[in-house]
Image (cartoon, rainbow, N blue to C red; front, side, top):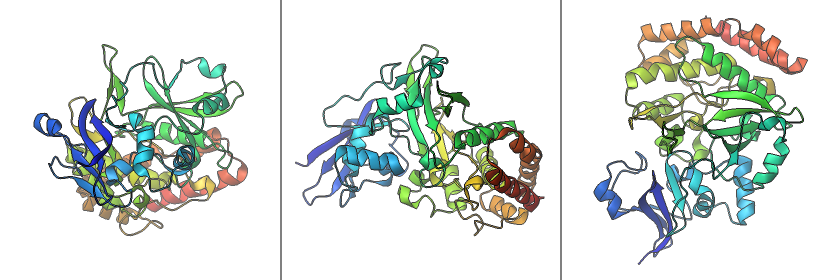
Length: 402
């Protein structure tokens, strides 16, 4: 009898188990009770089956590895647990009760925590930030992050510290600028607001800039994979990024192309015809704003209230240009630099967007960002060097699409 290593739940229902096989592999197997009574797999990459999903050497299927935190938070977690980098399951169990989406991973025979308010995470009210410091919040969370929220890690946003918070109304992430990337929260807030002003723009993640008792800035972002209904009951929503949907590990998030990521997303959404122009819009906006962090883990889908998948709100979109990173994260029509209007139209065609719709989206984004350089000069607190780099990119990118 294989040794059960962990239980896996979806929306609070036991979905399956991780076990160690006789030859030392790690295997995920759906529970027979789940197969009999449920029609939704954990992921499109893990279809319902009586067969096990095996991985050798301590690895997990990419869907599960994609639930782990990345970068410095993963390093901190590994040090805290005093485990090796290949003990993916051990690390996932440590943070698995509050991963992104609706899947939980817990020790065998352990009931997962219910999503209630406000028994876990930090309870916040609008006035709290005026009486506490972000350093206090960081210290309360210690080394181990109590929530595993994947996101940008390798470039600018990856250096930001992200803390999970809760209020009586919703679930949030608090992102704080690191010393090596000054004003990155102001940067992200500015470009999120700019995205929300674009006519017919896809939904942008709800956010606001906050300051602690010392004046230190942070950006408070509402989690789109959680919601509270009219009865005050909290719910988890399924969510997956393009890396997971492509059955690729997080280390491949820069190796996929824009076309491959788009296909992974559009294959799963309820209405690809509506979603495809919005995917196109995200890449156009990333190019125009000098965002080099639009990789496969920053493109995702989320379940709606009807149980259907749609594109997630736009998130993690600071401009990386002020910090010296000016190339796109993914190849788009074969290039990361020197993109043109013609190349974007080719990309649109390749992901199923008609030339008429693509031209319309381009004009909408160009119109919506017409005064972005002037607004950035007035609103962003960069030093003269960083501001010069940003303005240069904003102006050159705009010319490239006219």
